[in-house]
Length: 228
Ligand SMILES: [Ca+2]
Ligand SMILES: [Ca+2]
Image (tube, rainbow, N blue to C red; front, side, top):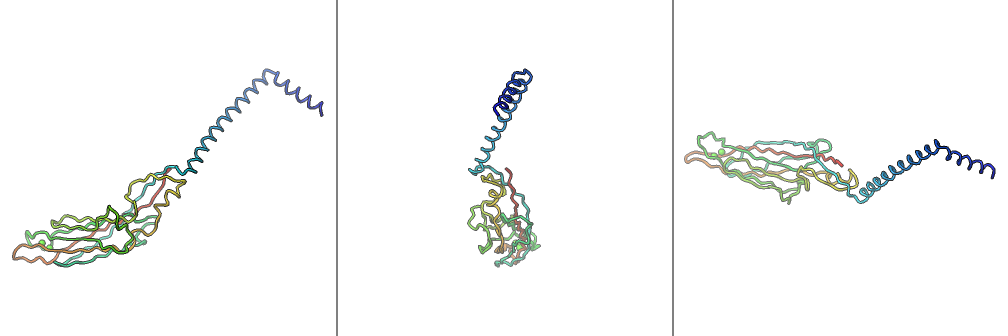
């Protein structure tokens, strides 16, 4: 046993005494040092990654792909009358993976009496607050409007809390977590009830009993995507 050990040792010693072997050894050592260095750098980087994941400070950009669903109706409303026009908003209208972000309503009209120089009528519009699943108290909402010169009346309801179509910078552990606030189901569903009334304006000795009003409802739907 002792003899073989001595033999081994001398063998190693001889190898180091050889100039070529020395160079080779130096080369191997250098290689290992570099290899170790790369690995250490990798480890530090990985640790940073792990730390950001644990801290949850990984930043993401959530962007939204939009699809507009257009509904429309044309009604004739008598002078002095108020009518409620309903639009049913349900999941069957939406594409897979999309949610309702907001609803815009545009009300347009002119003078349809055919009487020359008949002045434009007045139209009043308001959205009835019911169980339609929107953010009823959102500060961006416009729930009422009127016109007495034929200009459009534009109303808006935010359906999804915080949704404005703009990219959002989010912080989170992963894609699932940052998308989670944008995956709420059922927003915007229900019946949008629009109350419209007309007060005609007529020239003396002429009669204007009614007005035709067109309502264009755009349901803004979105699908979120997260980019790290
Ligand atoms: Ca008129
Ligand atoms: Ca009219």
